[in-house]
Length: 100
Image (tube, rainbow, N blue to C red; front, side, top):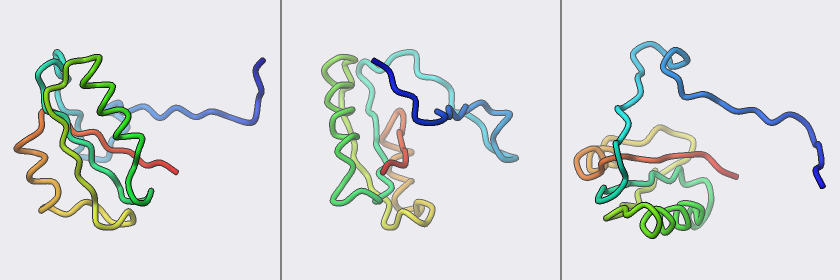
């Protein structure tokens, strides 16, 4: 049984929709053996358990070697450089999201 409760909106990460200067990172050819970082926006306390579940699935099903969990100090502000720099140097890909 299906229920309809309004509109479902899908946002596209296509480059033409980015603000000036933004661009997508190149797509990884595989996740096997890669290090994936999750950047939690710190809105869900004590942390985003969805990222924990997704990390486990990526390791079990896709062969992700290592998962790094990072968190912004405040969900209302952009991530600071001291949070982003380690992710940029240690991770092959970084996933972030907003959830409620």
